[in-house]
Length: 187
Image (cartoon, rainbow, N blue to C red; front, side):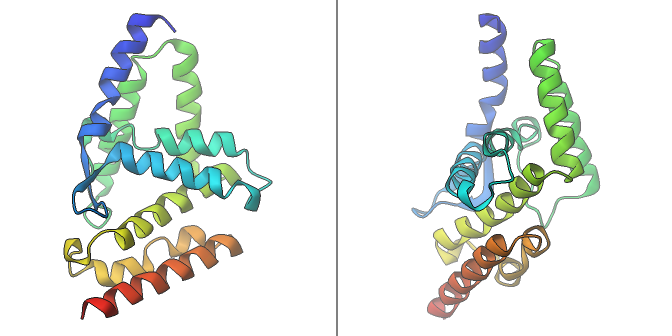
């Protein structure tokens, strides 16, 4: 990739480090979108032996790229996100990818389409882990950062996405137990 194009594109997605999510870190500050994507990629690497049918390198790339649109739109919490918000984020990805050379643009467009369609083992794994990382991060954050609606949402979030995998279902079960314990300790 031409160096000037590389620097320009990195400058565009650098906003992922600036844009914060609805999640908080364990020390009580807002988490950036980039931090979420990093932790998600680490999770994918750590579960690779549980999913021998999946190309984990591809899953890791999906994890790193999945929120590119939020460099433009910012993060909208899942419980507030509308179909229009989803479309705006997809449009932002499309605009961002136009800044890339043809080879990288086509590769990434294909990857984003695969993630959207949710048909491959890699797309399903990335999506399930994306949900579980959010649940895990809520468990790491001080409970004072939780909104009242999140007490129930925390227990249900991602159930559908993990249902295809016994391993992920067990992960969700453990995270729910951790959430319940955190809630009970706060009362």
